[in-house]
Length: 615
Image (cartoon, rainbow, N blue to C red):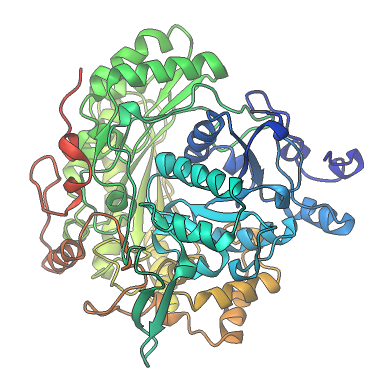
């Protein structure tokens, strides 16, 4: 199907919809057994930048029997045109309607994309509820961080992939092919899929609730499927599949660069961070493999920037060796290196020298809290002197602008902790003027403050989010305190954060609220111009749900949590222990200094947590 030119002329950024990009995979649809469409529930520019989708696109298209394509959420102008002319949502490579595919796989990165999922299914002409689909409809599956608590969207997905998808998606497609050959029966396929490690089929599990609304039990329908779904991980990252070419967009995307995945996992154990827990254990790639992958992508794409991706890049055990090897050829080819996620306690002059020719202007650090007491509560394990030392190195290297990331509304936070954010920013400005070899221009510090959101599978999963009024008061309090023109203060919309918290800690009862929100026309909730907090409150009220029950209630430590049927390898006992240590303002050492018994080292084999140094 080709979108009429008259429609493309009317919409913003028509290249979002044309397909035909260099590097896409095109096959004969009559010569494959399985047709798969990766669906990203956000705009083309965001979806095209997602590394996970790029990897899985490569995995499936490496199979001769499968053709994987792509689809994205159309922006509101295109959606209006599609509905007016009855154009169904299509896949980029073939232009075929999504309803003609065997499997649709949604990458769910963010709770506020949930309404986009429903909208895409609606535009595709596919029943929203899994219970209303039959053998004529595609299997609808989900992957990504949000599937670690898939309950708020459980009614809409046939199955969810828990953990890392490279192996499990391959097994699911193989299973589909086998069922298709012998006469596809949807219920039989889903029953067999539920036996695969890392696969959660929500319809095969029945929740029950206590009188107070809390979860009482979750019961599997069959004895031969697990009561707890264990996440899948790739044990040897050197052998994990990685694309040697990329689909090249026609327009600028969020990540218009080579993204080189260096390792997975994190050694740090920040108590608010879900990613640092669910990606455990640490598994590194060798310098040799990374260098080969980097050169292949540089040859295939022509990008002039490369970012080294991980949760904390300076914790890679071979960071100096890797950057030395990359600089041997990236400098000659005018490819700049980007090192995001740098920790202030491991930011060195050597690293600064390697990226000084690459990134001019500002560097970003994340102290997360303004006082040492609160940084100890969240187990950040970073001190003020670490930040000032890192800033001094940056200033000596020619930087004059620093961005500092914080959270507001953290457990035990007081006004003194908020004052500490201002004081820390002022100390950075003072450090600038105390640095002899600083640039000859005015310094600047940008404070970016997010609202704390309690996330599943963290030591703070039991904590309530601050009430809306309290969050707004905290934001105003700090805003009033800052009077230095060299300090800029940005903060996230507390209303958006509240809805995110509701769905982050929600259960299956929220599926009705999501359906109501879709009915009311809500979508692109992660975009300021389309977020409508009052409409969300109307949707909750219409289905009899109090959002405070999920966002602002302290969950009981003995309470059955909606995500307790998922096993990420890190034990609930560890999370409880860390929660209690937080209230005692006691820190926990990182995993390389001391094994803290979280349980994840049982998942990754002999190289997990403390991988051997690979030169």
